[in-house]
Image (tube, rainbow, N blue to C red; front, side, top):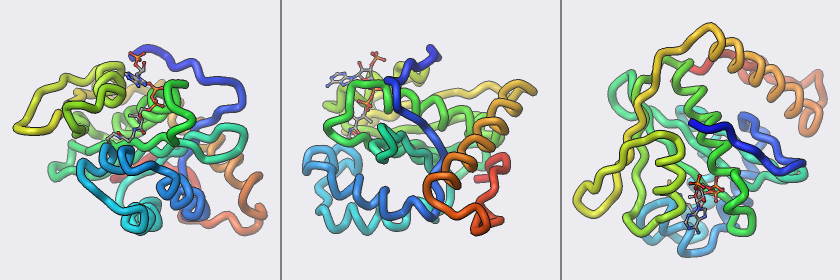
Length: 199
Ligand SMILES: CC(C)(COP(=O)(O)OP(=O)(O)OC[C@H]1O[C@@H](n2cnc3c(N)ncnc32)[C@H](O)[C@@H]1OP(=O)(O)O)[C@@H](O)C(=O)NCCC(=O)NCCS
């Protein structure tokens, strides 16, 4: 997968429970078409907010894309049945699309999945969702039309020492940034300290 060049002032990091309100705000800011694309069906703003309120604490890993310190994109990695498989999903704020946030979140999600022992990632979207199809292709996924949806499958190679090291370094950086922006350092929750992901 090609490296992603992010605009200056943009940062990708893991989200913790302290980011819950920002995730809710982002999902509330999605217009009806974006909610339709994200959930592959009509979903109210309230239902999207309810989903968002649980997103960070639900099983899996969630990463955020921040522009100038504000959360503008969310990438989710969720278990998908078999132990070596997982599902990914994205939501980028409407005014911040086409700037590489989705691709950068995808790179981080695939890195975490690979190092977490996943060998295949699945992504589903509507056939008319051109940005998502382009993003899936950019991540290296194979796309096929399953009845009335696109099912993208991304095969992951096994982790290497370098990928594990990189994940560890990113995790340490994530915690430092999150701590400096949201928590007094003494309140760092021990459960949230960066460890290699277990899904
Ligand atoms: C799909 C989505 C996450 C993409 O986020 P993004 O930050 O705009 O993505 P990027 O800027 O990294 O662009 C990814 C690819 O989409 C392409 N793209 C972006 N906007 C596009 C558009 N309007 N039409 C066609 N392609 C587009 C980019 O060119 C890029 O392709 P490339 O790598 O071949 O150049 C975003 O549009 C979104 O949140 N949509 C609503 C929710 C949704 O549909 N989720 C998917 C289901 S889980």
